[in-house]
Length: 403
Image 1: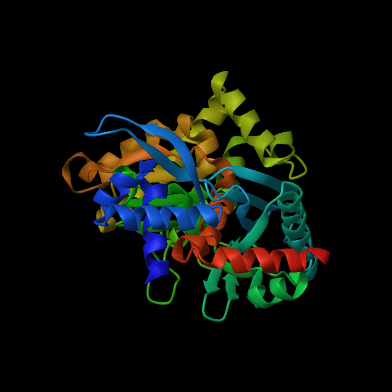
Image 2: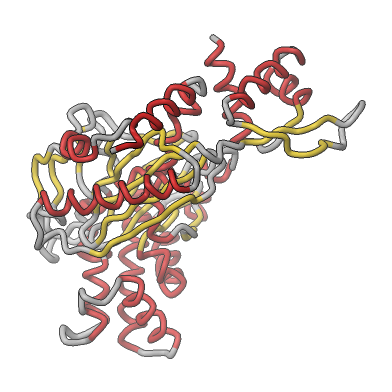
């Protein structure tokens, strides 16, 4: 019961910002003495701190409190076709460390890719320690279908992996004193976009584009995983039955017409530098943006074509789910300003409800960090679920610091 009340206060501060003890008592239907005692305990755990004077209410101004947790960090990591990445957030959402490494996962063995990812996670944890903090948990996003109970990557068409026990492999390599879990990277991107306390981000679809296309469904502020956890594989909706063969083996999947390969094929010849995988993805997208800004007709036509397919798929999803917003993430966000007119035209044309059912098109501001930020957010849920774990986690982290 005590842990539940501590969790209630901590989550309320996260979702609604700084509050005085008196206001917390009112908001959460607690006595003032109970609210003060809970805040004191959270302060002793290093999770909240004084945040100045709260004014504007009746009676004497009170001292407000806010999330602290500068030493309490969660790590999010991502394993994708062309990169591995890791990022640490503290409890207040501040980025403590961030690393990214370009790879070609199709040309390397599973063991090599996992070793590279583990190296980045360790490097990120070292940065957390150097800043005086400790890691409470890590969550790794992987581009593929995840059997969550077994923590097995069952199918990953673009990685070309099948039935890889990623969870067990990562834990064996890390030997970390903190919990390590895995999740689909599109789901983690969706979690990052569902901002706590923002009513406009509680019913959204997040569509994440890179080599493949995936995403997540957030309804009522909660991620929907589906019956077996496989929801959100938007990229494998069949939209063009006579089209290109997909990496999954079927023909006409949405990602064959809206993924990065489709854009590059339409925008540039094979020998064009923008098609060179040795060039970073950020640089390739920046070059496409530059060409479009200069009015290059081939680039603009490619962006219009892919944008139309993005809009067609988005309309199908909107007819089924009617989200308040479709948030386009990954490469879509980097280049989306040129695609927006085509996307919105097809969304309006393809949704039965008037005015597209009120669904807005938005572009993520997180870029390619969405999945790792979502992973770090999930990792920190252990603290928001039970703030008392912090004392034990701190001791475990200190004991494990000699690895």
